[in-house]
Image 1 (cartoon, rainbow, N blue to C red):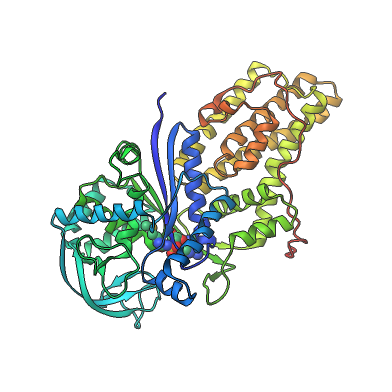
Image 2 (cartoon, rainbow, N blue to C red):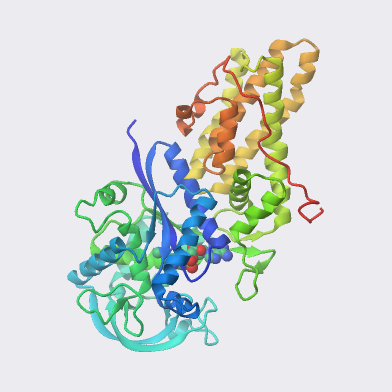
Length: 524
Ligand code: MSP
């Protein structure tokens, strides 16, 4: 079967701040989708990076006594480092200060201009530096933006994009693509915003100069969102003559791009970006998925409160509880995806973290693997035992629903639901193991019955290993290595393979460590 192409992107992160849980969360979600798609017969391009222009970044640089470029170079590295710290499989890391990006943004601007969608005028209105967004007077509440950010009054010469001409076209597009923005509630917000009427958008600034220059009018720099959104094209070599990746991953990739973003930036991705693309006559994205926001033990996360959750510290905390780095990273990834339905807001609480890991991973999957593999190692000469055909058929029948639903749920970005199913499957197999107690069957000399059960449990562990790969790459690899599953038999299409009898297994080692609640300082 020939492979399809797939393109997934995270937002590019502002470098005014160091990486925190919000950045890690979006990126991990993208990574799960990217890894899943690779294991499901796709060529994948997964892009992340940093958004380095604009007034917010310029102000932070000044505050830090650095030139904007120096400042960006330093902070961008922190985001690049995060990609390896949380084991992302991104294919590229784009910075908007790179030449390939600046060229793309200028080519894109020229397309909008040639098509007649740009004109020069004077902008007068509210602007929030924190949100890097313009607000109309009716959106201002108590002198603040709807997000709570401070706003400033601006009056300056500006280029405008004729956004007002795109209202009907956007609504028509939304109608034809009912899953364009997910979850539904976010889509509804976007639709009602468009229905309330779109005003032309100011797309250049003259009052500062940290940005991409407007072609043929260097006094102006591009509005940071127009600049930033085009990163999704820059990384596909849009500015090159060949445009190979753009062809492959934008034009020829049917269900792409998928832009995963936070709920706060859905307006930019769901309205401005498709309107810009329509104006430039470029294919529109396949999907915008907006996830929710994390709070910290019930409190809104904010720098001023000082309750920012730092992914590095969380990984250190887990290492302090005895996890090695691979396991700590996998636990962090697992918790973020399992704790909250993707799309909803969630609360980060270390106690919930430890309880969840112990119940679902250590006591369930870990225990299943350890008991089963230890018995096979000891009682079956470390070889996968035989199974009779009737038991095998019955087991495979029970797997059918899981085999179908788990990949479907991941493809739909219902990560928590997919993990629920994975855990449910492990519980069913564990229950079977407890009910049929192969250790007792062994004592009673019922060897073929014991073998049947152990075979099923071993194959179930293989299935769990395959399914867990996108979520917990290192632990899943360890599980599949214990069973000696060949590298080319680890794809989602291999789920229905049959575990070869007589295959040697390796000496079992515990995969999931129980987190000690006393050590964690939060006794139940
Ligand atoms: N630079 C823009 C994106 C441009 S994309 C063309 C931007 N950057 S950001 O660094 O401010 O935010 C990046 C992402 O982090 C957003 O998707 C945002 O929703 C997410 N989060 C920031 N705080 C968050 C939480 N507390 N919880 C979950 N995600 C949050 O916006």
